Image 1 (cartoon, rainbow, N blue to C red):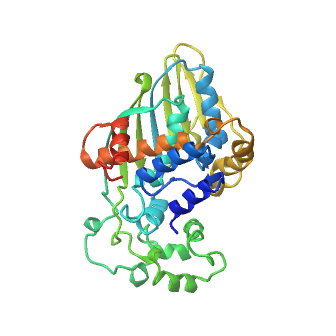
Image 2 (cartoon, helix red, strand yellow):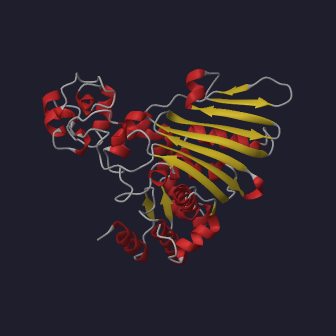
Image 3 (cartoon, rainbow, N blue to C red):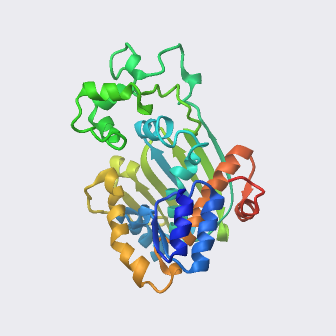
Length: 355
């Protein structure tokens, strides 16, 4: 039984559901699930954990307070991380869009959702996008070499994406633990043996991947608000700049590392920049900055106590729009056209576009 079939059956049997993102492999399936949940009055909570993090809840509070006035535009960036990208989107499960989902959906429907939410739930009206697979491709190879890193003769780590680093580098081994159960206790020799036949032992320039390693999007929202979003393998962490009529916000990983602070609010006319202090949380990637625990804490209310599905924090109805945005972004990238988002959704539902 497929995942979608199982979900449909669960909803028909009367179950409420906690659903990981992306909602489905295709946009049409995601929208059909949204419509079925609404028709049956079921509650489907989607794991958009960023909404539950201290960082984004603080940003939302500042924006909603009116401190920087009316929002006019924003720039947002997700740095996937060079090793993470190679692990997940080159060698890994999501390396090929034909067997998974487009990169902008698999990784960045989180971002589309958080931008829609931060900007006051204003729907995206139109967008354009450009992106390429520029580096993680055979075209980058300057000379032939074995297709598996375990067959390389160069010293381990001379190439920064050498898969043998899974056995020698603690940060790389952390990612290995997500696909190899014995990552912590296995010896380097055991890991080498596993890499000889595993997808994660392949040369990162000789895989079957087709996902872009950088992509930019330009978006227009209701009320005339505009924004840009950049996904790149060659940056680490998310950051955002939000520009309002009274001031601006600069926030995220870059500002935390380089100053003056993780969130800074600066008025346009007089007054000193205000650095917003956030509590340091444990858990790192595994806890998604506190978002995983926040989701679990909110789940009881979202499923059992709020008055209607529309009042849930991350309902499938809200989440569906982030998926429409993400798939429309991929369509814009592939077609080279400015995409009317509502028209794109209509054409997908009518079977005119295969997404």
